[in-house]
Amino acid sequence: MKLTTLAFALGSCLLAMTAPAQAVEAPLLADIQTRVAAVEGRMIAWRRDIHQHPELSNQEHRTAKLVADHLRKLGLEVKTGVGGTGVVGLLKGDLPGKVVALRADMDALPVKELVDLPFASKAKGKHMGKEVDVMHACGHDGHTAILMATAEVLAGMKSQLRGSVKFIFQPAEEGPSEAPHSEDEHIGALAMVDAGVLENPKVDAVFGLHLIPAFPVGTIGYRSGAILASGDTFTVKVSGKQTHGGFPWNGIDPIVSTAQIVMGLQTIVSRQMNISKEPVVVSIGSIHGGNRENIIPESVELLGTVRAFDDRMRDDTLARMRTTAESIAQASGAKAEVKFLKPGYSATVNDESLTARMLPTLQQVTGGKAVVSPKLSASEDFSEFQKKAPGMFFFLGSTDPKRDLKAAAPNHSPKFEIDEASLAVGARAMTALALDYLAQP
Image (tube, rainbow, N blue to C red; front, side, top):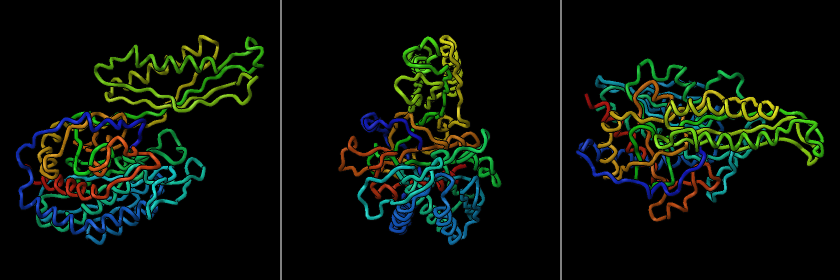
């Protein structure tokens, strides 16, 4: 999950929901619980193995092999190398019906682990040409283990399965670990969609989850409509004219123009966008320019991110950013070149009908602990699947209920950790969603 900030106060904003009518019949729910319990020990072992051997985006070769070997042992039709290092398994039920897809992401982050675990990562990898420490600091190791367990449970229930289940193990959700070869290069979910992962057979609905420490174990957070923001990365290069710092009138100062551009970009949000409709965030994360105190440099470069929950507001913000930066620079004789690194992530928007339809399932699986989640300004490329098929994405609580949620390290932190009891909850939820969706007309 690509993050800007993650509000620890999330839990305090939740609205508890009254459990609706039962979706999973009691005997079936008990069967799911028994089957998940039987595989839970190995699911935890898979998670620990993957955690100890994390791999960066599009480098998930070991993880992909682990997944593919497991799916083949279950008798699934398996494809590897899908959209990079992706793996897809197809389970055909004994009864005719629709097709549902379940997705997990496999990649880790360039983060040095600071959690004292016997299976803590000591791995290294290459990120943007540099050797870095690598860690599963966002829970993708858990996602992969959950879906491996779900595949085993559903394979054992093949005789009850109406239709087919596609298990999508996706690489590169966190974005590229090396510079793209071209502006049109696709990775992650979009690369898998390009490769036809939702076709042959055509997927009717897709489900995904994400471990999140802002919820306690046993709780699932859902939301109809937009749940995660779009995520666009941008650069601004401001070019001036180098000169001596004591004689600024002999040059064009790109640092001053850059400072004005930074403030100008913030006024797009504060004065030009109707944030009573949906929030928008523009953040600058990096500024580089100059190398000496008495030399005004030739150029300055900015790197930042934009988050939005509405596609029209997103497009409007990006257009205004270009106009604002170029105009401010021109006013001082400088030049600003704005680039958006494509493709950015669209907002993750849960299909309203599908969410309402599957909410009873989540309530049954959690014993009524499926709660409405606030929107988060993190972003996820699960949105690419939702553009092609109705989709629902939900949050899986990963913090020990006895712990203070505010003290839990967030996703992408070097101290990120999960309570492994959350894995069984995730496997039960994914199993029940697949069975219930396929059972409904």
